[in-house]
Length: 152
Image (cartoon, rainbow, N blue to C red; front, side):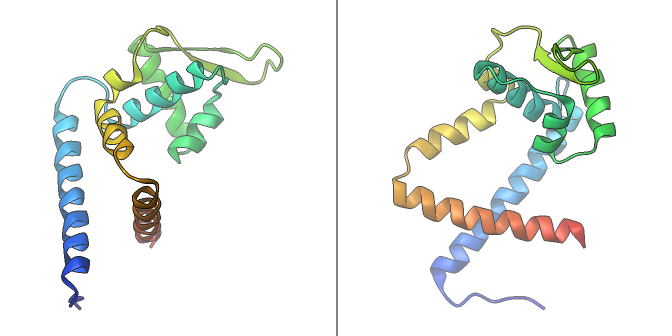
């Protein structure tokens, strides 16, 4: 069943979201064939670097929670980042059973590792408070819809 929108503004919004989904899928395919870190590695490194800037420790569990992946997936991810000399994993100073993840080069700029997020943040800075709240609420509902679709 196809849902037909009768309001032009609703159709414009739905079309824009569909175009965004196509562009993201195309970007993901390009990144899979390109050298360098993939999407998950970029997101992970941005999180690790931003947490380091805030002087917040990062554990593998923190990273798994942030990425929404399993511990096994994070282990493989950390191995790739360590092999790429982007991070080090060391024992937690007060709990030997836990590990801490730290960037090797703290001068790395998260915006250079993940320039798309930097560009999105620049665009978001141009929104008024009202526009930002409306857009965030709409995008949150879309994210929930996508998440539910992935669970079925």
